Length: 220
Image (cartoon, rainbow, N blue to C red; front, side, top):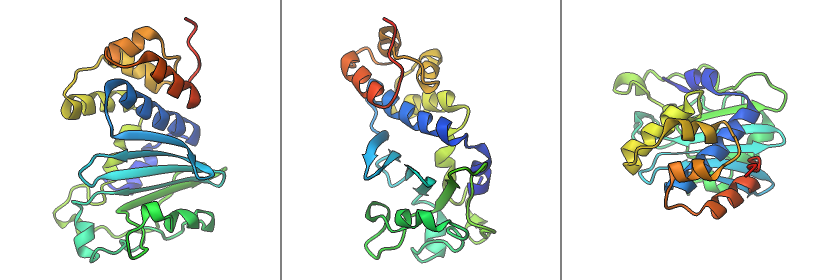
């Protein structure tokens, strides 16, 4: 799997935004710290994942569209490129996303974008884009998924199942799929759903964050 496969799996911008917010709320409920969402990322908004082991991604929502960058530090793309940006990752990137390429939070000390995969979607576009004709063959010698774009799998249509797997493998908790799906489909956060996912969580705090992220208020 490469960034081209992921580009075909990602949903529309509006749905992607909701899913990024849902992951942040889920982590808040269950006590995870992988997923966050910032409604005031400068003048923009951004969803992020940090797993604490060097793997990460950022999804930045701007008036110009959406910019995604991610890092898989075990990718042999780093070794083959001498630690520099892999050739072709930014080929065709619209100039309106230039600020993201030089964003200090996304660059290394030398000012080079820290990424093994990059995607974008301009406002009004009907598809996700990636660099044109990226040659993965040198890195694909020992990697089935050379660029690490599989990290974005959790944002696909099976987000609830993927989050359930993450909770079991990383947080070592078993969560009811129906309750996860309630959150990932952006439904009102009822007390029952919050208790089902995180018996020890603070419902008031969860609801406060959820409402700030645009979740509809529960009827109860």
